[in-house]
Amino acid sequence: MSDLGPPAVVAGEKETLLAFLRYLREAIIRKVEGLPDDVARRPGVPSGTSPLGMLKHLSGAELVWLEWAFLGRDPFPDTSMEVAETDTVARCVAAYRAATVRADALWASLDDLDAVSVREDRTLRWILVHTVEELARHAGQLDILRELIDGDVGR
Image 1 (cartoon, one colour):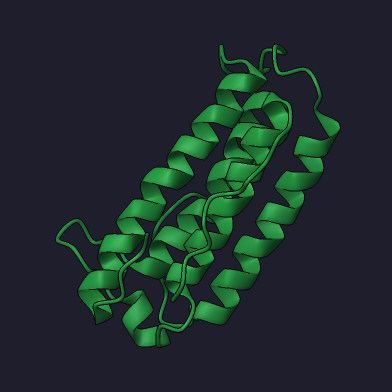
Image 2 (cartoon, rainbow, N blue to C red):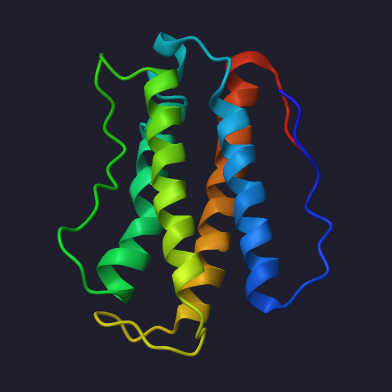
């Protein structure tokens, strides 16, 4: 697994944050790809977190903030880390990529970072920064899981 370096971007606030968001998404996928399905399903720490569980969680996390909290749409996206025996790396990566395509379409349609969400007392700016923070935190956790699994280290 080779990590890409952070994006070199000269842009406004929203474009810069979205560039880092996309970078983190790809880093997360790279940390899971190449693992055998049974290994990716297996918890790597006592809390029960597994690489596929983390990926499944992140498939809903960004959409919780954009669709449910900011736009007020139902239902609440699934953010559980529960992994089934039928979950595979390929299917979970595809689901995560589909969720990020959906999120990117929403980010593209939302311009006012000062707008306040429908369900939470949060601005779109707060949601974007929090999303970058959450993905960065989980990418670090995946770094540790991957190192415990096969010694592969991230950035």
